[in-house]
Image 1 (tube, rainbow, N blue to C red):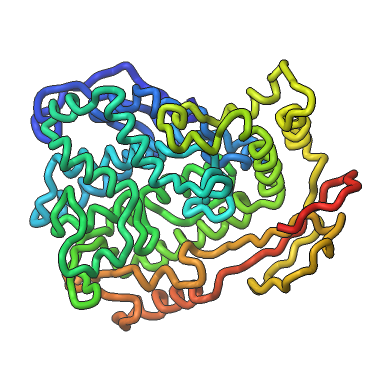
Image 2 (cartoon, helix red, strand yellow; image 1 turned 90 degrees about the horizontal axis):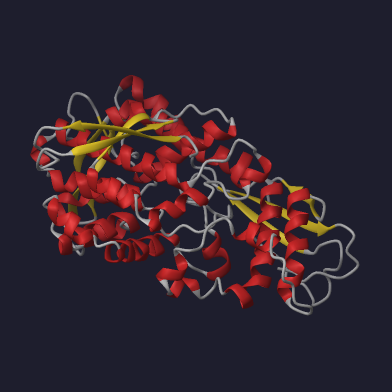
Length: 463
């Protein structure tokens, strides 16, 4: 089960988050150890829509290059739910004035659990953790699809009644959970009137926990950084457990208005830099690995050939069909016995087998760093030697911007006072903090790759 073992032991809890005496499940995760799951989370996990995540590789084509990268979206989603609960419960225990309710905690956990429900197949072109295959091929964003699948899952499995059993307001809390999944852009925080339903503006900080679009620091990344490094065999210095201990909510100015936002202890600046650096390293060594990109290109070609028969591109409009899509489509094509002469689908097995044996395509050259300026070429000027040009972007998560500019800190002596990056810090923290920020000021690195198909005698189209 990819690192997750569900125990059959049940524990009775006291009233609180679990509004009555009820049972919980314990799962043994390879990364986080023993995790407690609220009964409503277990109900969600037991749905067909969530179970499909067992069959979707976390790193997609990365499994062809790194044999240890066999983990799936299933265990990642459970890990995110766990970390989301840890963070929001820590904030509640430290700052009772935030008035975080038990319903808030449960909704945040559900959002963490369901944030990848719309996942289909990952393509590592620009993962925020990464860009996903449907966005690359069908121009479909997986966060929006996750909210759609979440709606479908709730209705199809009659979970509204289960939500009411645990004192959730179905209409209000469902809207809140979907906003947590999709995340809030920083521009929303500067609105004079709070634009989101589900929760009032006093709960604005909760929208940064699962999908943080202001600075990219969220529990989703905490889990997949640690989990991916574990399975890839790549070392990391970022410590999410330590950062969690030094997190609190402060009032931050956004233009003319103030909103409650998540801030971090000033001495954790180096740890946060290590987080962004970990992202960069994972992209460079794994997500944007040249062989991974080649395999993804071949998968793209296979899906294009199959689309007229298997209708992948129309599935996004039908949640029932969409939730049937998993990473097993390759095996279905390879094992397809009935072939019809003249059909595009007839050639797909050979395309996929060449992906398995790594013989059909290779990287011709790699430029360490290039400018994103491509000279227009005349039609037909790119023949056999340059069948496909690929520009690979590698940055620290905010393209050519410094992600630390949107991170806010506090110090031990005055924990309610926000310290933005541009302010000078006191004594020993100043040099370390400012040097950390300067390392992130460099522009993003662009790699230019040209791929050639071995044994080909025909020209390829420039892309």
